[in-house]
Image (tube, rainbow over all chains, first blue to last red; front, side):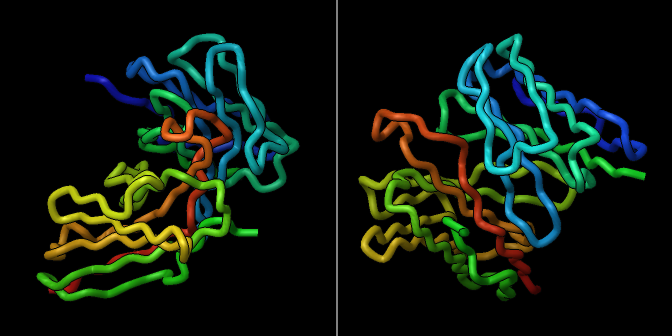
Amino acid sequence: DGGITQSPKYLFRKEGQNVTLSCEQNLNHDAMYWYRQDPGQGLRLIYYSQIVNDFQKGDIAEGYSVSREKKESFPLTVTSAQKNPTAFYLCASSARLNTEAFFGQGTRLTVV
Amino acid sequence: DQQVKQNSPSLSVQEGRISILNCDYTNSMFDYFLWYKKYPAEGPTFLISISSIKDKNEDGRFTVFLNKSAKHLSLHIVPSQPGDSAVYFCAASAGSMYSGGGADGLTFGKGTHLIIQP
C-alpha cells in the first residue's frame, strides 16, 4: 500500500538526550515536511525538503536537525538543545512543494 | 504574526444541519488553500482544496468558498454527520503549482473543533 509511515508512534526520551524520529514514504513524492503540533496550536513547520540532499528551515527549526539522503526518507532528530520537545510530531509528503500534502500518523514524543 | 487564522476554536452543529467553518488569511501571496480533518492522535487527512483562480470548489458534502478580496475562505459541510466530528485545519501556500513557484511549506491555522450533536 502506498503511504507515509512514521515510527515509533510513542517515544519517551530523557532530558539531555537526542532522539531521531523516522519518516518513510513510498509515494514517490519529491517534497517532505516535518510539523509539530502542541495543544491549542496549529501545525507549525519545523523543516521541509523539496528534493533529495536539500532541506530548508521552517518556522521553528531551532533544536532540530534533518537529513534527506534518500527520496523516500526524511528523519528528524530532536536534539538536547530543543527546550520544549514534548509534542506531537507529524511528517508529510507531497508530489511537489506546496501541493496536497499527505500526513503520517504522527509520533508523540514525551520528555521524562 | 499569524498568517492563517481560524477564530472559532470550536463549533457545535446538530446532525443533518450545515456546518460552516471559517478561515481568514493575511498574506496576499497565498494562492492555494486546503482543508484538513484531524482525529485525535492521528495525522491530518486532506479534505478539499481551492486555488486562487476559483471561488468555489465542491466535492460531495464538502464545498469550499474563497473570497479573495476579503482574504476569507469557508468550508461548508452539508448535511453534517456524526463522523464529521473532528478538528479541521485550514492551510495556505504561496507559490503553488498554479503560480509556478515554490516558497515553503503549508501554513496552518490553529484549527476548529467541530462537534456534531445527535
